[in-house]
Image 1 (cartoon, rainbow, N blue to C red):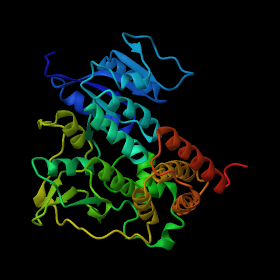
Image 2 (cartoon, protein in one colour):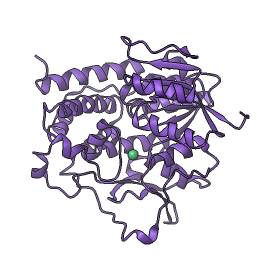
Image 3 (tube, helix red, strand yellow):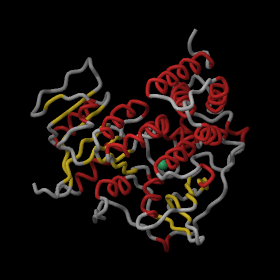
Image 4 (cartoon, helix red, strand yellow):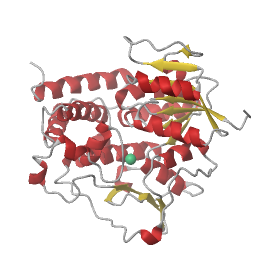
Length: 378
Ligand code: MG
């Protein structure tokens, strides 16, 4: 192994992004190696990953289980996020569990390939300020933010960001039709294969709303300069407009391994035969249209929470996490998700410039509120 091999600490190795990150490492073994793996509950898969990638450090959340002994040390995830030996920390855990390790990595001045959304949405002001203070570098992994980052490369300040959204499985559906959609219909995403929570969030367009908040923090762009456009083919991953009116776009086949690899290889681009190539002559058309905010109120609610700032985005994320879980358990309807979000945001007494403790308190408050509103708790 030479010095040109980047050592990765992968947090959330058994999730969708974690598995695809390992596929990039598998394809480019002379460029990347795994020094640490952290996973949640899927011990069977983690064990296979340990055998294949031979990390020196391992973390797993399932306290009751006991992993087969091997040539590795157990290490808490927050410590793994600061590992001096790691060249890049890949923050791919889902939900608010990604917040603490992301913050730890940023405070340690690491390069963080960030896939976890909650870190920037719930605590964007704190995470970006700490990154500046400690010289940490946040490398976006989300396809849209990677596209914007690629379009901004070598440019001076952009005037406007245009985030594309596939529109999900209910693109062009009407409000009444959404009342009776099933979990199966919701999980049947037309262009991306992802985890369950984000697939539901894509169907409701909530995901696009929180991506607006992420773009605001990542690229220091005012909300008025971030536009959402529906693009069902998911080929243009986002666009950036400059002062002269010129638009730059990044196009590729919808495959998350591409933005993952770019974050890991930046500033280099590496050939990877596993990545599919776009064949433009086989493409009949690329369609763009404005989103339907009436039918998909979660999009508007998320952007509004971002604009209001303070603890609103944390409340939004917590409420959505509970509401989506209740929907997946078939306890509430798909259209109840935005109803619950709206009610909880209305009742929240926000803190304007919250500390981490105040953010976590808002999160706990919102979790409790949604469970009560949904009647899921006595
Ligand atoms: Mg995305």
